[in-house]
Length: 549
Length: 79
Image (cartoon, rainbow over all chains, first blue to last red):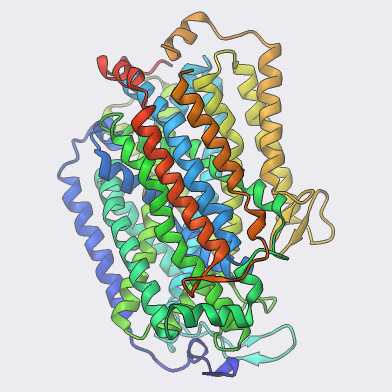
């Protein structure tokens, strides 16, 4: 089978195509609405129930909600696109290392923080840090930084969903959503591959609204329920979709053989990444130890034993989701090189990595019903992260900003819940508007966001293992992290390639001295934390006794 | 630190080192006819990580911390 690029199915968007996949997706949204209504009946109306589900979540739901929360567009749309451009090394960069490091964070840090949360009644991460470091001001410093780091994470979801759905619905609405022809950098004019597709702005609006609905009705309990359901959906549909795509390509061996023949470099790592680059990625998964939304899920655990299943099964769950995506990515690279797959291009003419998965689904999955179910699975992965992040920003605003500022009794419990909801809407609206203007690689954006959280992880680790760490050390570490992160992200994204101050961009990766910027951001964070802690007064004995029982 | 914990810490470091499989860097052969060997190695690595954490959970579970947290709940957030 060989096509000229403009004859390929995804390019034939001027013809009206079946809308069945879209109807399936709409049906799935209806199921989520129903789930929101059911879980709202269990909502007890208190802020404790809204923010930590009254600490009643058991092992299976904890695994599903924690895993679902860590898997977003980054895991499905992003990993496929990254594997398309960077090959199989993508799995080692993020997935296998996460299997080791995420579980380590859950076991070594998560369990301890859960115990302090249970013992002292914490609802948010910042409440814990405030007490542990005897500083109200630390909360005011960390609140905008953590919210600021969550915004790119939310963006990953909205951009990933928008790109995926526009790819998979191409040609469905040629009159309503017509797009002008695309002019490539070489001057050639081609029909817009996304003509007649649902615009990303509409997708973002719909999924944000659905998630807001079920989060508003039942808070973190709804999020946990929806996460469990959605994680099961995306794991099953991911595997089914993978096998169907493989069948469409003539079988697993034939699909990989095509990659080996036409894009053999993607089946290894030589020339695409160096060992130093690969190794430095291992710092990125440390981010889970500082995700405020994950902290909140830890606090929902009924008992410490609830963590056991999460710690053990998390590496396997990652494997089940990522291996198919990586293989689909390298198959796509082989097909693209052979001229058998068209991937909608970026403005510079290069294939859009965010559109690789939808191009493969659209081209090699014949059943519209299956395309719809698989697409629902992709949205499930995305929404299962958005919900936790939404609840988290609301609880941080209420508990870490409003309550410390106005006093515990200024607002009633119900008013606190509504304050949280209001702030969620504000942040979602801001993120939504940004997503309209700044589409970028889901994988890269995710890595930047994770790098910031990873560099704050030494604070979390020190808080539970190092008695000598001080308030001043933590302030210095947070400032060092924020400063270097902003500096490097500006250098990477705000300055032209070749004119960057610190690093260079190779294969779409911004590297400083051959390693990921997270290396230097973490280094700055650790040096500041340790250095300043050692020269400032240690914390009071009462605090040490409270947190080192 | 207990003996178990030290052993597991050492195994953790070994696993972190084994993640850097430079010996697979330029190999393109396919395992089972479809899985690039570098990807297969890291798939096995994920399984090894799960087994490792299974053993840690069984043999080095922080029972004392668990008991401390369960003994009386919710003393109230400080500031």
